[in-house]
Image 1 (tube, protein in one colour):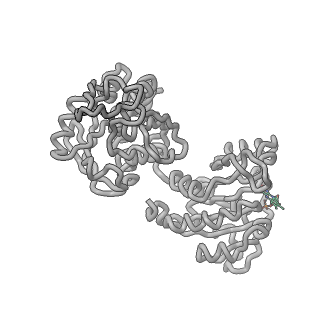
Image 2: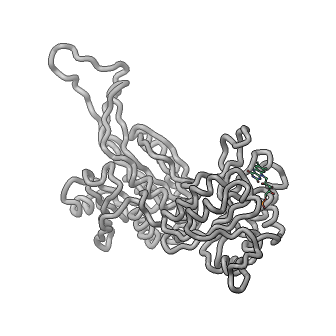
Image 3: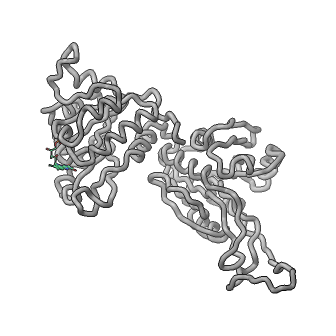
Length: 406
Ligand SMILES: Cc1cc2nc3c(=O)[nH]c(=O)nc-3n(C[C@H](O)[C@H](O)[C@H](O)COP(=O)(O)O)c2cc1C
């Protein structure tokens, strides 16, 4: 996903106020530029004590603005010009002091001045707080954060963890890649706003004995990409994941399971409270009747042990028959005859939308191609990276939903 240009065509004013996390702003500027954005850096005087404008200029290929009396602008109004060009203003790091200034509409230097002067309905303001945990927890800061939210400002983070001062707690600025992804998500159309989406992803693992089991090559990448895309589209997302080594997409609630039975038991109490159910997991069809308590050993006879199998519950079919069922989307990973198998599976599971993909071509890969089958026919989403496909699928699902009633 490294070469995605999700911010292509976006012009971002990146504001830095005074804090140690300014060192992360250099990386952030790079990430935004790599994602296709043009980045205009504006710094408070305090920020220049932590990182030089030279570094920020070199990374963004644009001169940095550090004071309101800058003579470079013909009309001498950098705060007006800069704020009108922007698609968004992101202040990272946002110091405690800077947030207090925003709350009060102070405008005694270039960055707070341009934040106040920006056309708020067209140029959103996002802030990434960064400070010592005591500063963050102080009632004054908490009041200010609440006031900023009430004013329509998006507050990104902060995270908890080790702090530059040596203490541990809330107040760390999000990492550069996290902030980049927050900004990318911010710009995605909110097609699933107010919807609750439940997704299964990855393989399952059916134990044979304490050290062996039956599983498959599903990596979970497609389901995790859909979870991210649904969250970006404004949904509340719950992700039930089989055994995979993937980071949880931001703001997604994740429940880890191993076996098909555990996945079934995790999904069933949640399904009716969701508006959409997307079953991407490659759930094992069968499991050993009982896992041996001890590792099965060769007995010298040359005959392998007989492993008696039993069918697993069909999670998608069960959810699709609930009286209060969510809108159900199934996935079929096939090796051949994709359209026929996808149509058969859609009819068998009684789901409105079935998505076919070729298992060997998708498992573990970063790209895929999808075949959408519904009552009207089928449509192909051609080869692309999984996040692109996930966003397209989310858009397709959104057009098929009625607005939430709850
Ligand atoms: C070494 C040092 C580190 C600081 N780190 C932070 C910080 O992480 N977050 C913060 O809100 N303020 C921090 N401050 C205090 C701000 O730099 C100070 O409030 C400054 O006036 C902020 O100015 P500005 O909001 O105009 O950028 C730090 C100060 C010093 C001297």
